[in-house]
Length: 109
Image 1: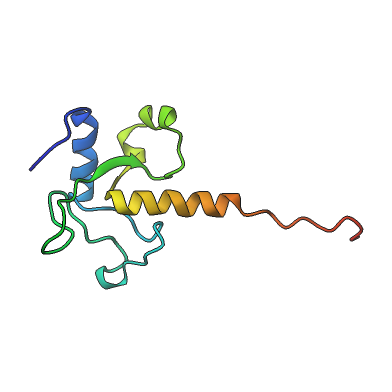
Image 2 (image 1 turned 90 degrees about the vertical axis):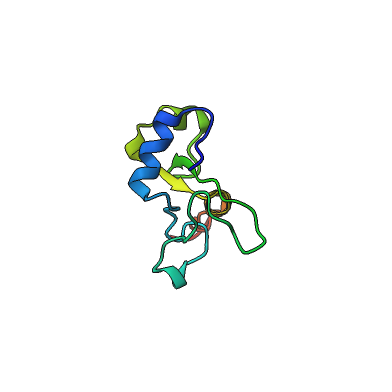
């Protein structure tokens, strides 16, 4: 099984806890309904018969965590993510964060 070139001491415990499978349970916008609510992608697996190899990453459970803070997180606060789910979850979180909060109108009492 392949491993990253750096931070193996952090990456390996996260992957072992996840069973070398993406831990996304819908934060990416996909309900993963066919696989009991969890992303089916596994490390070193393929996306499809003619697809590319999947390399899972160890990243914060909150995809909007700034990189400086993410680097200091303990492994217990990291999750295994496939790149597709992590990118989609971050995009979804940024979109929901950018939505304006409905404030009362100026003259509503």
